Image (cartoon, rainbow over all chains, first blue to last red; front, side, top):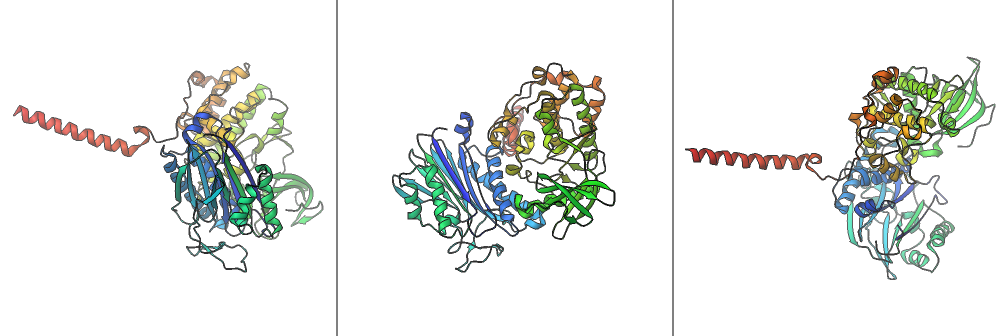
Length: 253
Length: 326
């Protein structure tokens, strides 16, 4: 447990009436569970009318956590994460059918699992995962969206967010929009010193990758740097909900 | 939602005072000129969890209020689904949350036994009506001044004939991992036995003053439900009648099939203490173990394949024997 530092901050921004982002992290205190299943860090950015995006992102995160740790799935962490993501997707999809007022809700979601010296990623939509290693930054996930910040889904489902003046885009994949989803699954070695940076698009609306990396590497403690990033985004207009989670590996996991 | 001022009229009701924020709604004490009595007005609060969820809960409570009639459920007096302030007007019960009552220590054992019978009677009724409460816990139980219990908040109940509820009741937000049955934790379909489990945890808490499983993170609490063995009721409170400890233990069995099937079975035992099977007190409740697909039992496909291979080998063996004997 001493091997992680996790700092998360989320904010509604200046424009949106509610915060439809949601994040969750779990580092099992039980070393046997930590060794077997690892630690899971998730962010999600909801979409859907009448604040349903808020429900979608919270339910997606909570159900992925619960499915990953308690569902009956593969022992292989990557496969298990993929299977649990499929189930979380179905859960949100099913909810949006059962609740008339929540139809068409969904979310983008990026889940980072760190287990036995490796990282595993399950990713859908335009939330983002960066890896800062040895001063270099690399974007691990791809955006499942047409150009720019999103507004619609590919299946023609409207995201009823306030329209933006700039070019609107479509999410080409999202959690909860269809009965099944194909998450992007990645894995690789996790090394001491690695910093994994999870963001929703509200951060990137105002800060480019260089600015974000610089803000996180300026020598400040993460506990101060992370809220400062959100404050800066708000100073620049806070166009969208924003969530930033940094998972720093401080020793061998 | 900004609080509404006392004196405001909502249809025929006149607000008297805010009672607080519970679940997804603002609740107000209000006067009902028609009955000259007090009612509780429950007004969904969109700020709490997004309109979609709030209204779903509202709709569910309304449906249940219309369906159920039981002394332990606040009577639905009136409701309005549209307009600026949709509301439910419910019978006002003067009393305290059971959670609050327990804060000042566990009640006397015979009081607990009485509470248990009342709750079981309510569960028996709900289950006979095809309703599973799914969120039974001391903060959803009101102890009236006359000592009668009332169960509130049917917002995530499942009702036969209403859309299927597959989700775990806004798990992350409702924060009720302490009362969550193992099958719910694993995302399996809920039956009345999830209420029986929550009842068992509540009974344990009423008797001992503490919940059996509690950890810092809800996921850790969930692990405890699956794997840890709580301190027995009789150790924590030796004066508990064994039958009551046995009922709590049976309700809290990890495997649903080992619990009472529904409120009726539970109530029958509470009403006939001498018929209660005490052997459950000595029977270990093995952990649910790894949540991975590991053995044949858990993996029917593997089982079928092995069975087929075994069958083929046996067949060949028999054929070989036949040929030898020719």
